[in-house]
Length: 121
Image (tube, rainbow, N blue to C red; front, side, top):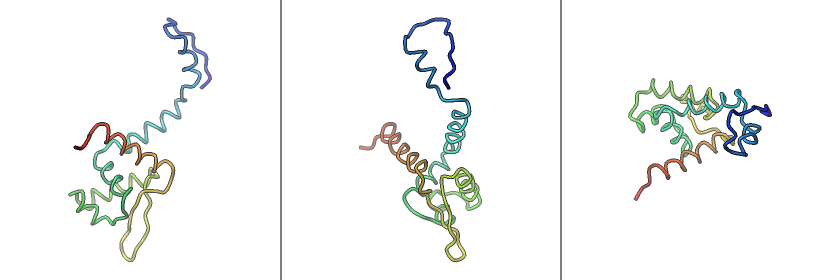
């Protein structure tokens, strides 16, 4: 960020200003990894469910019509990415969306994108 670049063509007077505020490669890499994390429809569905309710693997598997091992794999990826948390309840693990600004913003962004791209009557 802050690097001055001489553009071959000065079409827009704001180009230099935009370049001064461009995120760094590392920042863009972080965002890309996060987008990849939610780029799988199954993980997106599981994350959405866990934004609304705390559930165990068996119930998530039934809700998503997936096998328990497949759900467990996606839960591990989401947990490693910091988007969900787990707690033991008896013999079962229960999962829910993390109470972090990032998880909350992603949930709200998902809802907004769905409203725009998948309007319901």
